[in-house]
Length: 451
Ligand code: ADP
Image (cartoon, rainbow, N blue to C red; front, side, top):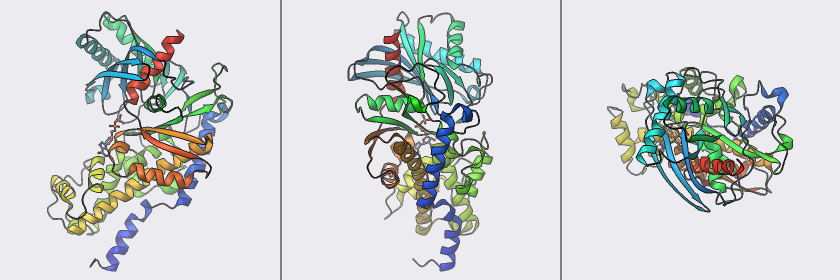
């Protein structure tokens, strides 16, 4: 509308790299399949980007899980302690969020686990649990090589955490050591470590027996799925029934060592370069909530510098890394295009002096390109897993604020997965509720039964 053709060309040139063809998404699927196979094979596992760690969780819940459990949820924005009661299909829980201050996120491992033990102690006092012996399930959502259900070696910190002396160590040992150091909580014992993907899968499977994939779209992205033991060449556990195990793919690291370079944009390269883990978690950096807003900001800034937005006039906020939050992307895309009330409010928050209707429309377009690419890349990943499992019907349990709050993520994924999977397969995407807590309790319940 009244925009000169040359301007449209310029905009198109800047944004084109964010718009990928189905051909590209199919290539992503093929590469991911290859990467998954490398992770599952002992000859290639060590150098594989996508580690495909066996979780030692062998089956989904059957509804007979009972009792009271403590759960910890660490691995993103919040740290939570939960008390969960399982009673057949009925699940009740109480939880409390505890802040992990930045200096602890970047401090020593002992400090981190002492802090966690303090939080458990406070929670138990507040809930009058100090004289109870409670099994604990720990949802620890960082890449871990598991060597047992309650033995998990952290391979590398992600998502803004970097505590000294934890990488290469068993986090349950560190937790138990911190509990020991306190001396006043001898009755807390961790029976199982899972990550949030397993939590999402388990909690959905509790009510939907077809659930075979757990997906996280939050601060980071990751997925787990049910694999046949015969395909898990790295498996060192028993071969009893059921002959399957949940595989934590750690697919966020897909694309490390250059295999996704063919779809990277300048914006992605800049996000990566300025992150605390350059060269790592490349797929995650194109998809998840920690980075999506920043990708949009970089694209908006590029347009602004070419005088294609805000008459070329920026602001301190708009030029600040990380200041264009991923939630803005959701809010702008969900805004009413007849008045752009929310979008204009965000522009005001960013102290952009002048903005027009045309600016609102273009920023919304940028946001939709960034989120569409993220949703489609995640879809390529899910389609790859669905094709690999080849179940006639499969449910995907999804958790994370990006999926939960973005107005179109679900619909975009439904559309793209349908296009990318084999025609004889069908699937559902359902929101997982309280996966990290409920899932940890369900796994701990099975472990407690076997003890
Ligand atoms: P975590 O993955 O850390 O456990 P969440 O699932 O809440 O926690 O994800 C947090 C991420 O979700 C943050 O990176 C944030 O940017 C993003 N986020 C929060 N609110 C929204 C929203 N309304 N729309 C899209 N993303 C959001």
